[in-house]
Image (cartoon, rainbow, N blue to C red; front, top):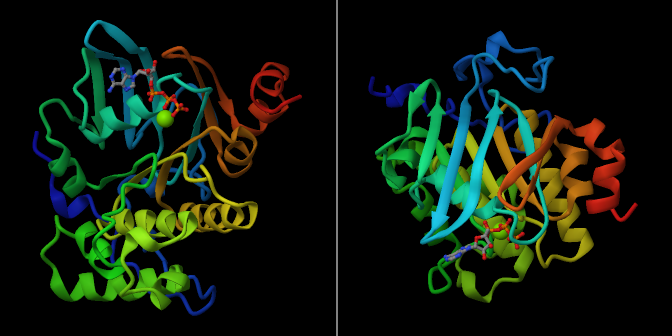
Length: 285
Ligand SMILES: Nc1ncnc2c1ncn2[C@@H]1O[C@H](COP(=O)(O)OP(=O)(O)OP(=O)(O)O)[C@@H](O)[C@H]1O
Ligand SMILES: [Mg+2]
């Protein structure tokens, strides 16, 4: 079954005078959102009906080295899910595979009820899957404005793109001040904002963030995480990969713990925060 692309974009985001955040998703337009509780959380962490993303027994290898060893995970519409784990656990490999940048050895990825097998990375962007990669991956020699435009390459609705640009500058006023600056000359935090805004310009339904806090000063981490919370609160599904497990579990509804290519724990985020095993391994407890 092919995917109806009209179903796969959030409805136009509109400036929201009540919050001033400028990114207000029209949740009416989100497939399946009405079947969830108001905050998008399902009761059981193990069985989500009607998920936006369902990964089953996914295996990914680099040559002979297996980096992801048969993981399964689910994300409901509107859910913020954290994927935590130490260096080399396979988190980035998982995100790249979901984005279509790596081919799995085996396993199944269902997105909005459709298999992503043989769907190329650029098609996944059109379907509403956006990745903010580890290290941000901004186009250093392009300006902030040009980077944001690049995020909309899969779209051809010119006037809507223009109004989304305005919304991005409302969401990240720092970028508005620096529209014409080359992205390579921005600070790390500003580059993270560019990477997030660029991903949002594709109007994703599933936003995947790989280590957004990496290398940032505490105040900038706070700002970035507030923005992630705001976007999630407006109904977008988010898969958040973080080494800062505490921060990730504080904003997420559910979490998965990944170790050596396998998922070893999954639960409500607050349960994971309180878990002795997680405290010992990831929270310095
Ligand atoms: N291009 C590659 N070629 C070969 N092996 C790779 C490649 N990329 C990653 N790996 C290996 O796959 C494993 C998982 O790496 P991955 O980058 O997914 O981990 P991660 O959980 O994102 O770690 P980190 O928290 O350090 O970013 C590691 O052992 C890594 O060395
Ligand atoms: Mg990584």
